[in-house]
Length: 199
Image (tube, rainbow, N blue to C red; front, side, top):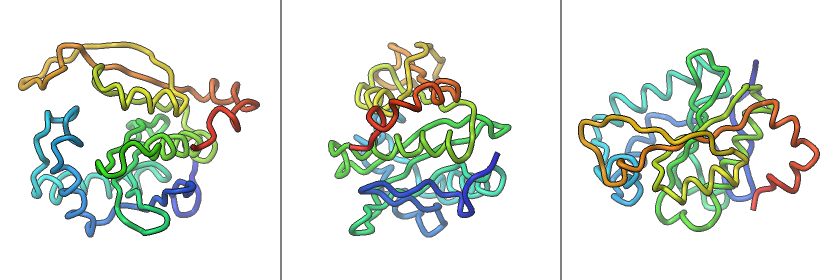
């Protein structure tokens, strides 16, 4: 299993993806400081600077070498270069599966960018990296993210319930899992240009 030389997904019509660096700390803290961005993750609570700088970001940077072609990437506006958020193909322990994810600034919402980036990552995961499965999870009540998962080609698998010490509103409805497997991806090869074309 391998990726391209840089381990980067291709650019889309409106997005350029690059590896995260320690220079992204401030942008990531700002992203996580928006209560609406964090609504379905922490109930709107911001991620502390120390957590981003000392825990989360170093963990992501270490993954690049351990699982080439997978990880998280800063999402930049292709024209202006502005930081919009990030997209992810977080690897399983053995690197044969990837969890699709994204987090975008509120100013980037409602423009189809989450779908555009997610579709590009799904294609890249199967066609370049060669994973056997792409999956994603969100809260059942997060209709916006569920639509993105469907538009990216993933299908609903299950609803499940987790125990939380400090549950946030909507937790009582559970979490949902979506997935797309390599064999399903291969079966849709003929229809893919129409079905998964970025908007």
